[in-house]
Length: 130
Image 1 (spheres, rainbow, N blue to C red):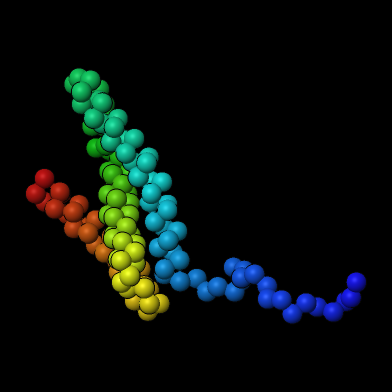
Image 2: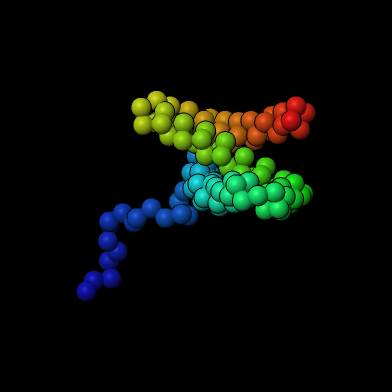
């Protein structure tokens, strides 16, 4: 065996990459996908409670009407909107659009800003007109 180092390239490692908005959106897209499973279970609980009678529905309504319940519903709304916008971004990439580094970074930032903005507008609409 020789002590001479090999000239082979090393595999890329996390220390080589600079964290980017596109990486963050990829991670958040997966997290929101998981959150949507949990939120959908809560939606099913609410529907079953509505079908089960006034007592069960009153309990579910009390939970969702509480501060924590409203916070969870806000988070579920944001996860749904964010996941949808991320899916549209991926669909654009699948069609061969917006795949340059600059454009994909701008779309990642737009996804983050857009998801928060749409969620706030939806909730303001609910609070004002609902």
